[in-house]
Image (cartoon, rainbow, N blue to C red; front, side, top):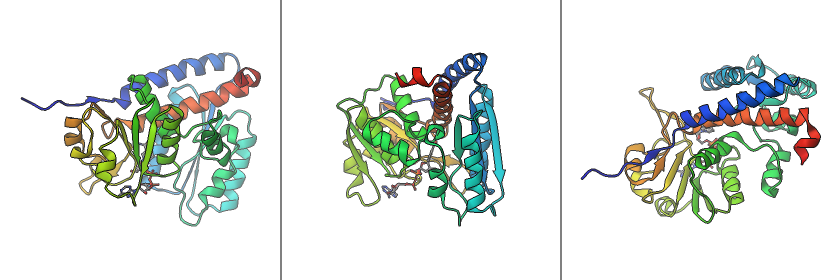
Length: 292
Ligand code: NAD
């Protein structure tokens, strides 16, 4: 008898649905006189960042957005980047500003992010939006964890009352995912590099999220039978192939649902960036309606 194999949480297909919905609403908004506008800022020549920016730029164009991409040399000063962001804040045709991280050495990313108008902070990384998330108030949520939630929602995977374990405690993924799951009434554990007996902690999870950046750290036998496994990690191996933080094949034999890498969480991140930008544009176009 062959082992059961998990159903795939197909981020590519789900993100295509979200993107089509965003495009439809964007075109309606544009017809009413407000084309959603996204600014993407790339500093330096990190190859992975160049790919991410190219993909975001393309997806935003396809959604019918107006896109302004600023590519700056690695030698750009802190003051120059901050002045650029101030100009983007003041431009009413732009509703979202994304500064691709990491920034080159010598630049203070935290200070750059702090310069972004929270209403245009489509990555959800400013202190205002982080506080809104912690306080359970409306705000722009970070794209990758929001994309994980969207993927679960669209597959009917409940969070309420369930055990969620997120491995990784970054501000970009681990912490905000934990807060979003808590908002959905899950019982949440955040595991990290100092967690003792990671295998046992993962084994409790009905929903297991790996956001570490270590190839195949989460092993198949750690997965609770039937669990939903979301693999956020993107790791390039020496042979050039991409793998996640979960050892996919053995994990898929135990899980109920699992995201592939690539084609799982990654495409959802871009879809949520578009959704956040659209939301900002809709608010800008109808501030009173958006408050209700
Ligand atoms: P990070 O380096 O900021 O955080 C990694 C976290 O993992 C830390 O909190 C650390 O405590 C924890 N950790 C490290 N070693 C560990 C271990 N041995 N056991 C348990 N926990 C350990 O990384 P990040 O920005 O959160 O990104 C994590 C991964 O997700 C990376 O591979 C990154 O490329 C990927 N990522 C993917 C997307 C996407 O769209 N798919 C978006 C963002 C990040």
